[in-house]
Length: 225
Image 1 (cartoon, rainbow, N blue to C red):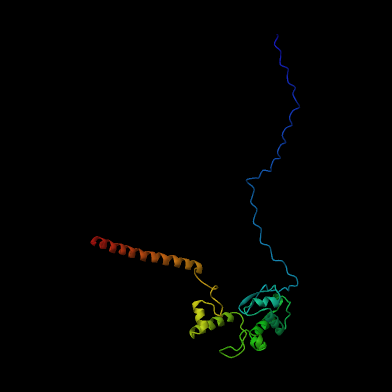
Image 2: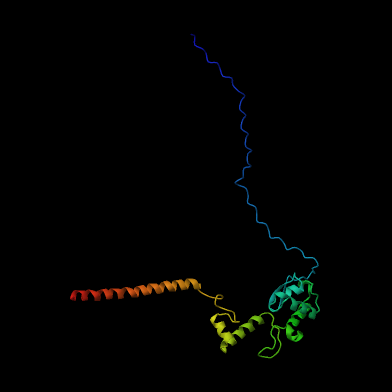
């Protein structure tokens, strides 16, 4: 039989070419770094005068001039919101006016009012009524608050009062319970466990030589018999 020629296989439609990936934008290595941005200028405040002061020095404290008088004065130690509003009223200044808008005369009047609150306020409103040295009703402001507090504590320590002794030892002063609160050092549970384990180990060490002595006493007695 004549050799049969293989029939050529029918070629199908050509396979679709894979979609080309979109080329990513190449980063330039020599790209210049962005310069750091300059700090932004503070926003302009509305209703501000030309001679506006952003910081006002009063009673040894730096006060924020952008805030209202009733709020800015609370940054002074010994002055709360109620005292600040009363001071503004006594000095004849609007509570809602920005502190930086006030003139130097007005700020001086506020500072003079702060230094004379013991006489201007009723006795129930001051923070140091019947001072033990002068017997007057005083209202401490600024650094005087911390100084008088430190002096009072040192006096209690010197005369060895109960509160002074408690201050010296670092314990609670006003009658609080200290069984489970205000403790220092390691926690109680850990120290108890450690103490119990140490006591057991000590007892075991003491019991071991006694047992050896009893055994040695028994041995010579058996030999004599």
